[in-house]
Length: 133
Image 1 (spheres, rainbow, N blue to C red):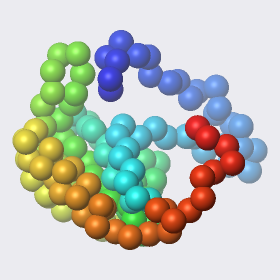
Image 2 (image 1 turned 60 degrees about the horizontal axis):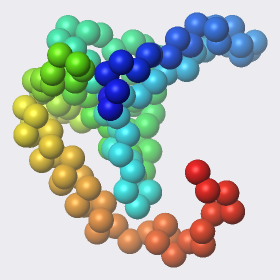
Image 3 (image 1 turned 120 degrees about the horizontal axis):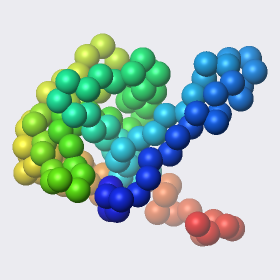
């Protein structure tokens, strides 16, 4: 988080908004990179912090999509500092350990970025969108 004092969004006001599934709630994602329509999704969890069932479903569904890489980082980054113990790739059946430490995570992100640079896609040939964001 660039601003360690930024508040977290409370989605409680949306409880029950989907009448056919009143338990459905949004989920947040801690980290997203995009490069040439490839996405790296990162979810940070502190030591012994559980991933909720809904978030597991979301992360597995994203990991199953083409051009998506989903990782879970065991650690934290806040106004007290940054710690990366281990980080894992999300698959349908398990977490696969990729590495550890801040430098290991940085190296993994850079390798992901470099591999995304070599992907030639329609992204580079597309006309500018009508609406800019």
